[in-house]
Length: 431
Image (cartoon, rainbow, N blue to C red; front, top):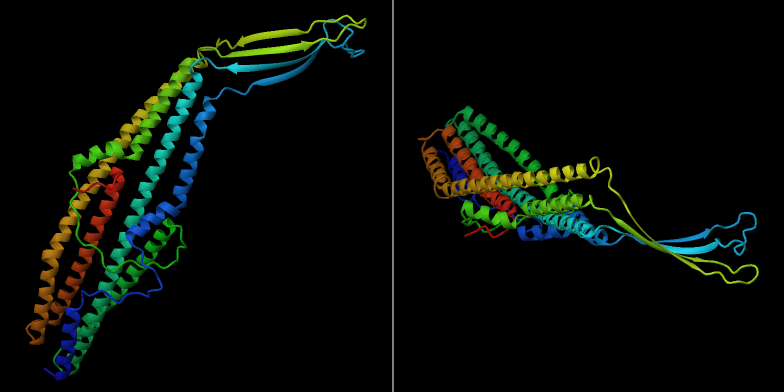
């Protein structure tokens, strides 16, 4: 074998030994965005969460309004005023008056209105918590996707350099009569495939970065740089049934539905009370002028009490009770439906995490080391012409694919953890 080929093979060995080393870090001018910083920033800056918080604050101001009495009414009047003279002293019945009236709903109605509004306000607060967990899950999932794409791009770049060496070696061997032209063409084809994969990965990375920037209320094209090194140990999570129990008490979505049931029950109780009348109490004072001869006329006081009479109860109050009863059943069915969905989310996240974690262990302890040993063995055999070029290239491509799959499984495990925490509504899902 010619010295030129030996030299290039030696360079290839060095590349294989260093293929797992990460690429050079990007410019330090771009700050590193850790997962913790991303989750803190989304809670602080996300406009969707901010508008939900504003809505909850607005709804918190409603209960006291619903529990307050209607505003009293003040009236002024002139009674029995002669239209020819407009003289207030001419007629005994003429009086200038002022009055006040106050409506009083039947006892218990105001309390039920306030109670229903209070439940709805608390449900809105639970809605804020639910959106917060959703955003945390989306941020974590997207952050881990970008982390995976960064690792994949680094692996592609390393394999791109290796395949370039393959092309040079195959070309040199062909030029000195020790190789075949098809080896050169094969290496060039695989190199072109890697370039295509590189373009796709970088485009996906830009799209994922735009999504994460949008969640963090940043310009979509702002550059993101993630840490190069992280903790690779995957935790052990609690059993599925324990996660169910946690979610039943901690998931904001379920608590919001329970509060919706309470609000619907209060509205139903209020509809039943609408069979009872509301009252209006009023008082007015009439001042009368003295007679033309100077005799004094007594002022007059009037009191009144009125109430509404629900004579159309079959068309109004009864139908309102039917409506509120159906709304209460709707809320109960909605709670059961959401509980089924929450358990499904937990089971899916639980199973996805276990599968991904097992894959990580399999790739880390078995497949990837074995693939690296295979590549080293193929390379040694190729040096002495005992392994053909096609098998050498295939072994390197296989190693590349397994390394990509390792990081994909690792990312999916962490994404499953994020989704599982959101489904449970707590971070404490670990043993």
